[in-house]
Length: 77
Image 1 (cartoon, helix red, strand yellow):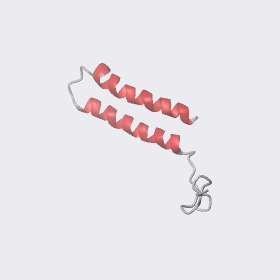
Image 2 (cartoon, one colour):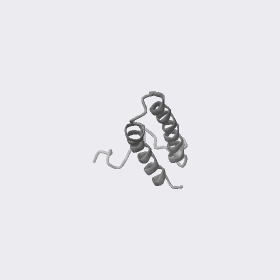
Image 3 (tube, helix red, strand yellow):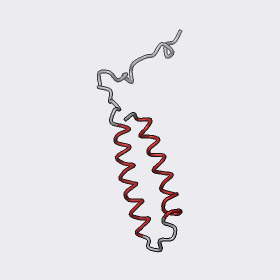
Image 4 (cartoon, helix red, strand yellow):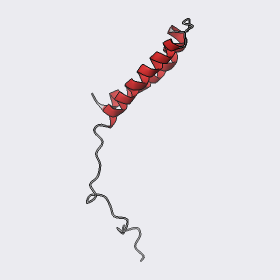
């Protein structure tokens, strides 16, 4: 699944964090109904963020630009 779909999934989870506790669980008087839902959604958001960032790559130190590297714009004429 692409990162874009995972991002949409996170937005759906965030929206459900408002709709489910205040809409569907609004009549439940016990606090643990919403709390359990928010805990489960929190874990799902963490998993989604891992799936989104799994394709991120780091630069090797040899590939990273040096701080002493002079760009063409930095040269005096």
